Amino acid sequence: MSGINGILMNTELYKYILETSVFPREAEPLRELRNATADHPRSAMTTAPDGGQLMALLLKLINAKRTIEIGVFTGYSLLLTALSLPDDGKITAIDMDRQAYEIGLPMIRKAGVEHKIEFVESPALPVLQKLLEEPGNEGCFDFAYVDADKVNYISYHESLLKLVRVGGVIVYDNTLWGGTVAVDDESLVAEDFRAIRLQTIEFNKFIAADARVQIAHVSAGDGVIICLRIA
Image (cartoon, rainbow, N blue to C red; front, side):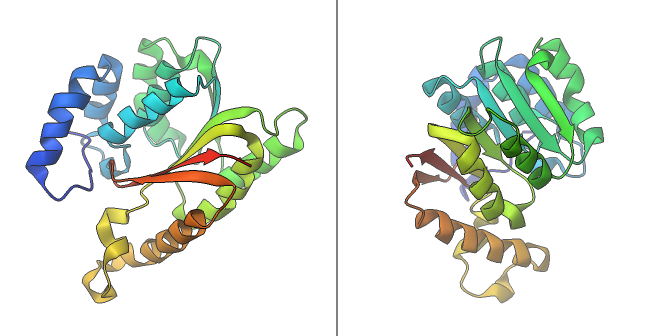
């Protein structure tokens, strides 16, 4: 099963969820993009299909029209968002790797949603700052999805809380970091997971204490924290 990186330790249970509830409803362009990414050396960076399904539902529930995406990779979550928005919806998509984005571009074009996407090849923080400086952007976005540069999640959060409206939603991916956030003995954690593990633990504590958002920490994919801006 390509494009799968879920946190559930029970492989059969996760397979059941995907095959029963996720894959039968996955749009064909998304399936094509997931398969096109499967052999990529960084394929684990793709948004998990069950996490994507949850995100699509959230977009529909809040009638999202204007969104931000930080971390595009080959574009699975970006295409999913574009398919979920109305025809005049707009996505500001930020990533430093245009080459990876172009892997998914044929499927995005085939789906007829490229006009909804403004791809910005850049680190995210300068782009967010520029958006905040431009008149009319503060509080005008409905939704944001963050799946890149985990060490800057708190900085992203502060900027996004100004850009996303009250009643809007911010989703953070990889908040369980392969389950390592719950490991007490760091020596049991793979060395290349350790630094981001500590950053993720810090971010999760920060969000749990943030009274400006109502949250749900969900074990879809590699863990997602859903934030509803309430102040």
